[in-house]
Image 1 (cartoon, rainbow, N blue to C red):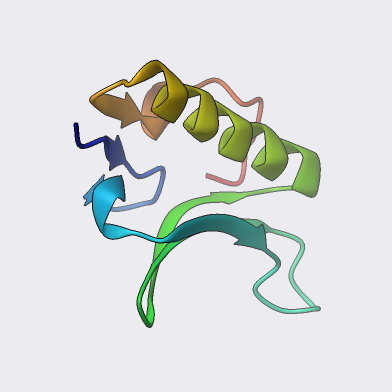
Image 2: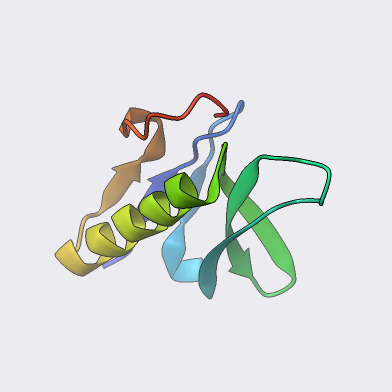
Length: 87
């Protein structure tokens, strides 16, 4: 069963997680404070959300993992309350 995610970005997209290999988070550059949660498919990075700090990004990755374990068909990141203002 495929799991789809609605991204938490200025222009939300629908992403099929069955087509990605990893979900990670990282800081785009040393001068930026935001953290980007991404799904990787081959050489392509798909931004799932941009958040203000590492603990919030870690929480989001945990939420995605839990939804995958439950077998959810859809996870709308725009509906999650992460207490974050950067998205």
